[in-house]
Image (cartoon, rainbow, N blue to C red; front, side, top):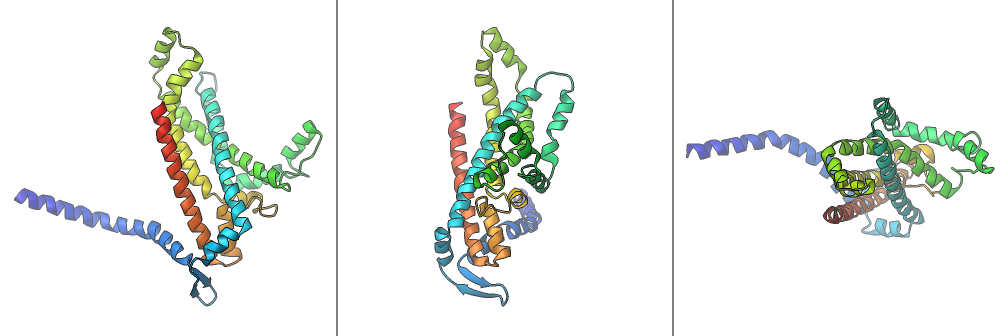
Length: 295
């Protein structure tokens, strides 16, 4: 009886200790989501603080908005192409850095330099490098091809420029995660496989990939959520242009909120982005489970 009373007292004590952190967490994470959903059903006048209920009008406007549709497509393009390139390049860099050679620790340190640079600095730097008149990248390509391409003026040129800058920035981080996974593979497995006559490809297919797959899946899921809500690289490189060709969803929300002061409409787009993140995150998790079973 005394034991039950003492256990109950410990549970109450634990709840009292956890409760402030739980309330703070709910206030900082759940409240903004609920309030954004609430705002999406109103037209807000920020000058007088008036809220006019409009029902689903903001969502109807969003589906008819060409800029929103283009921003959804570019958000998906930016997310999937960036993740595909940085995963493949990160795996290649990790395999190279896992080799035994002199100065390999120096090479690993140099590899992390792009990742350590703030994204807005990377965006401004690449904006200059892709400049059609003064940019070093545009100049080098013009020397090889003979044609000076206006990267940031052409819609698809600007989209690819943003993707390339983003891949350059984040590939080192992926490479270091995969390198950590490679170093956790027991060398005895490779030695036993070679004794059994396995080729380099078979070692990679049946030993390396299964060991790296949990890290790859976690990385893909992490960057999928991250890139769907990215903002700073578009803001720094193109400002959503030319036209609205690189207006990613988060940038469209920024424009509607701070440029047009259209809080209700921006909230409706935010709700759509939230649903997109939830749906894609669930799909990635489902595919990753299937991929793990196949391996």
